[in-house]
Image (cartoon, rainbow over the protein chains, first blue to last red):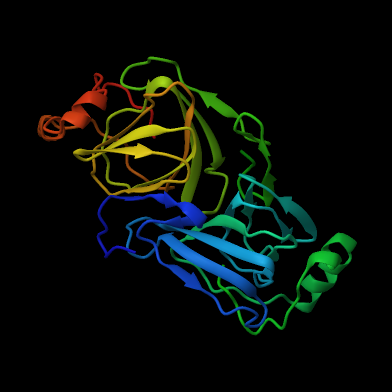
Length: 162
Length: 162
């Protein structure tokens, strides 16, 4: 990321879903309730915008943490396919499918396939920290057998701060 | 766009760069200093986010207005190719190239090709209105022969509010 008071810049798209001038941040695989994720911050604290733009990539078998929070997410898929658990529903996620995840909606992104699953995630710059689900959230979600087959409840002690 | 207090939603990507549940808004072709643009608002006033997500598509030969403003733009190309004039430089724009256009940077997007040129544009929800360029901005830009060959100065009486 460039410095504060960031100047105009082109982040040229490169092969293997990297952007020129953006450093990928590797997450430890299998660290807890998330697994196999890396992140690139294309627009973050250095910008004057009230939002941040990040690219997340989940390896085959990986997933984000199962969480909820006050701030909304906007997710745009740009690589591969995945699953999004959103409330008590499970949605297939393909190229340029776009999701609005409203405040306090429990959610998790899961890569059940054999190829990388990558997506932009846009969030408010000022946002609260993710919270693990309450037991009643989990019970409600688990009523849906599709969700039950996809969800990775984990131990909720760690968060990938998606 | 869904109502205020918007619920979580999937905007499924459809053929021809439409999203399920999103109404394209056509701009009059050749209305003034912009031409051949249509817009889809994927995340707008109905959401609680501090940002808006829009998809713009510029027809062959079309362009956005040449403008500047306090708010920053983030542009992500997802369809075709185009040109972005940003300050006194001109950049080629291709698939997933991402641009941060800093405050008060004069800019214009131009489709010099034969196919549609489409991109996401993310902006703060609270933003100022675009302004036409000052004569000194225009003179500085025109020093660059590449910019001079691409730019569409127009009459600056209308704006497509990119």
